[in-house]
Image (cartoon, rainbow, N blue to C red; front, side, top):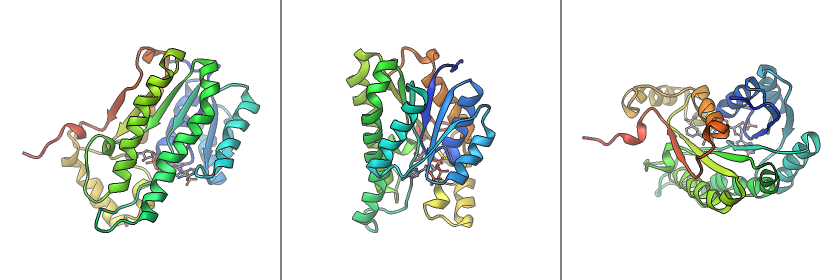
Length: 252
Ligand code: NDP
């Protein structure tokens, strides 16, 4: 896979899957624009990259920040080939103990921000005949108790992937998603799990994932790069589980 001369924008590159995705694309020769809210963490990602990325801080739920991210990328590189919509948040809460505030927080970040950033990026992706990879989740495909808004947000992203794939197909812009199972990152602890709860959650991956373990961010990063590459030139609208077989399991 060769991404030299390709400009790749990765959101949420200051941590976890996004950070590994940036590092992986850099090794494949991409020209990178990476975003996150914390400059210190973005700088940490940049230090691990094979070439120097463009760092753009921004709060994706703010429309002016989304515009700044696209404008700064285009001003710096003159084009955009690949958009990786990775940034996201999780919070616990089922129908009995969620709130509208929680719904808004999760949908604003996981859905509305992706919707807007993609709208802004699409004219440039059409120009470059580029592509989009959305980072969804196994929870977009399968239901989980106690994470209602998060599951709904990822299902929305899966339908977004399919619809936008059709909208842009004749313009030769491909749109796909990866749907990870549990991957070791900061996501769940940031979403409210204590260290003890997290260790128990990760331990249960022995049975919740067919392969008997959680995933690593680089395993998702490699799949994102595959979907973004010419090796996937006839793939669009795909919802690709990267989940150690988790979505196959059914209690027996
Ligand atoms: P992390 O918490 O490690 O990283 C999340 C990233 O998203 C950070 O870079 C964070 O930036 C950024 N981000 C979150 N909210 C905003 C916002 N409002 N504006 C700008 N940036 C934001 O999580 P993961 O790497 O695990 O998550 C990446 C994606 O993978 C998410 O979409 C998640 O839903 C998905 N996923 C993760 C799984 C897992 O088990 N880890 C499983 C399935 C899907 P900052 O550091 O600046 O806060």
